[in-house]
Image (cartoon, rainbow, N blue to C red; front, side):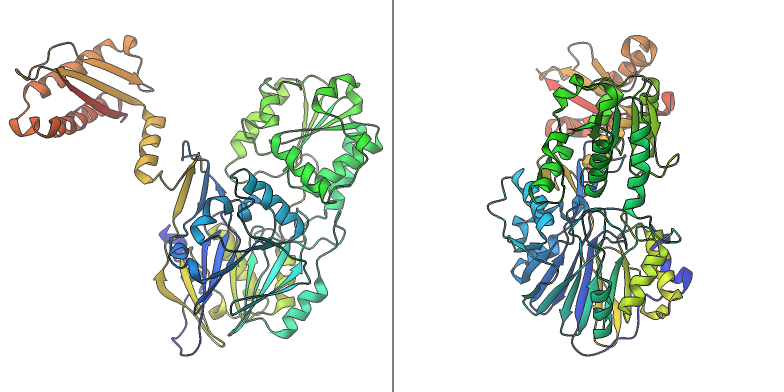
Length: 575
């Protein structure tokens, strides 16, 4: 982590300029600068705060039992009376999925978003019975808002979900632009191209600072148009001899539309599998973002009524999720769909970093069941929703900001994006590679990182619990997952303070007791000696000091014998 924090010095990109006087704007990222997900930032000027996005991040593999990660909003909770509004750039969970967990903690501020973004946000809030409480305000890209001292305007961008926008925040010190997630698609599906003219006009009016999507900053060239992917999908669906299963992101509506269109063209009925897919299709159809004839769609329970070459199934699970529809198909546990020889499975997505092994596992299972598996390395069946290098440079050349902050990506992505900005003429001293929690203080002519940090750690969501799983609990789970657990139960006479029965040893995930008789016998003998040698002070306070000594000594003994450190839980019962 220390290496990441020194990223600016490695390339000469400045993190700090001279101190200055005058009105100042604070820009603070709370998420999205240390990985893919939990995107959130806020701007503060005097007594006014505006928030951009409140996203979630999926838990890392070394976080057993954790469902999601959300940003730390403790600073905003203390200053909730200053919050004038929350602007959501688009309807993906990494930008709006954290709202139900955080909304009430922030004083229930008004939320602003486009039609589809709010529809998906409302659906998310319904799961938490917050849809009637939340103050949802629909905006059009041509609207302008006044939120406290801030003026807010929008411009349409392309992404892999319709109704995505960039945001212009007009502050007393100058205009701040946040691009949101974007790409430039000249031939999009079910939406208009990005508003190049409006973006250029914003640049002509003057942009003090721009914050821009860094997800594909390493990749050269331009992002492939969604329409080109449709051509490839049409060919694959047309050539398939049996059933076709297409797995993609549920909210990738342009892809869903093209799969439906290609299936109808080739005489296939379409069914949807997976709760999130069914919900996304229902919402998008209701608001006119998906268009198809009702006769083209069948229920999953009706699929068996049609010949295999007359069926396409759109499924969740493209990221290898075990409990997704595709995951259940791959294990042979799906109630309606049993994968068999002759089926074609198309993974129309790219792996999110960290999911590669899970995806490979599903692909292996599908192949073993007889399916032909097609993915992005074999055919062009996925187009990213994020701008590549030439688009990133084009956005910056249109906006021409004085200062630049790369956002939304891993640390190395931010670094590359900063170098791209320098290559088109933005001075090194005006490029800031921030960490979550940094305060970037911006005036009309200069900017500086203050050196003061706002809390911006990881808040873990486990079921209904938000933030109650901390590092200690997580470490205990990791220990149990890696090395197991040993419970030692000692029953002691209150009067004689001697053991009155045989020690009970329970092992879970460490060793099988019946197959490790010598190890267990030695363990019991050591515990027995420790109990019998207990000092008077160790017998006080419910024998807590003795329990600690058993934990330490047995932990060391088991490591010497096995080179593993299971969790040791001593239980002393006095009778």
